[in-house]
Image (cartoon, rainbow, N blue to C red; front, side, top):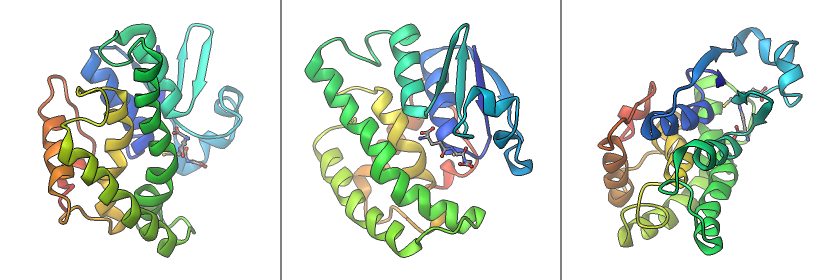
Length: 202
Ligand SMILES: N[C@@H](CCC(=O)N[C@@H](CS)C(=O)NCC(=O)O)C(=O)O
């Protein structure tokens, strides 16, 4: 199985992290995004959207970190990470949507602006983050993990850009339950980090 990967991408890190936690072996293929390799063949033939991560597993070719997490969990990770029941699946799915929605356009966007100079609306990214973080804090005040009372792909999807948000000025000082959740994640067997996540406290 190959992961087309970029070290500083939180979306790619979601996949690396889950594979490490679930003991799934991935062959990393580093894509030279700064030079634009993701917009040219052969990469663009794998993903016409021109974005990493991409996972290939035999005939299967997938883009989008949430979809890749779901595939890996269902195919190789076992019930612990992606449950069977409809209500349980939907509970996890809520958080995958949050990762692709508010986390993407909040803390991720703020980091893209500050760290990589991407021309997005900083004010809007901070506004979305300020609405999102209290909701996650409130949720984690009542439970240890985002879904099902145990670590799942929901945590792998949401965690990276929450922990990297400080690189875009979205810090976690006011959110002790989120900080405690991050510490729990970091203590999981097999956990692996990426540049920046260890400094989540800002
Ligand atoms: N929805 C996608 C978003 C992927 C994405 O935004 N990838 C970034 C790196 S983190 C990328 O390839 N950016 C280059 C570009 O869009 O040109 C996912 O969750 O994987």
